[in-house]
Image 1 (tube, one colour):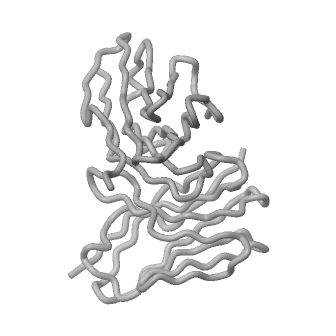
Image 2: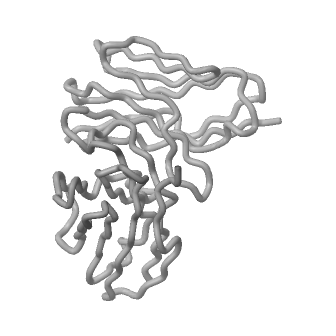
Length: 113
Length: 113
């Protein structure tokens, strides 16, 4: 079974631009969660989608948004990028949306200059 | 807010020796405690987890212990091998509240040959 895939793997953007990241969960998984990982703040929960509905949202500004499609693939969008948005963005999928047994993708490394 | 403290932040052990990583959590309602291993360039991989109705769980060279009264849980790796070198994260959550998972800050484990 293929694992969680994320595209692109690396991205360089300029302050003020916007970016869209994509995540394809493991086949059959209906829940996708997004996390931001930085050296200073560690792993922080962004939001979770289950069956195309956002079920939980972390403590991030409204510039961070996401969505999930009917095939469970998910995208997250960050508008008006700031230098502090530079991070590894991780996507995790699970079968039912319960927080245990999450399977992470390799992440998208976003650098904002 | 709720938090998870993880110690030590770095750990170097001789190959074949044991390694122990400790975490404490603040949310007394937490009932699910996973451990993740993150290798360079990869996303976190779930290696073992424990639920609040269990005090100890073992899987080959890896074991996790939980003390709910003291709100402590620990990861024990015995007979360490070079491939155990990675960053390890503990986490705590209420599995009835999907995706409200709080991660520790990580421990960088190095195995000396």
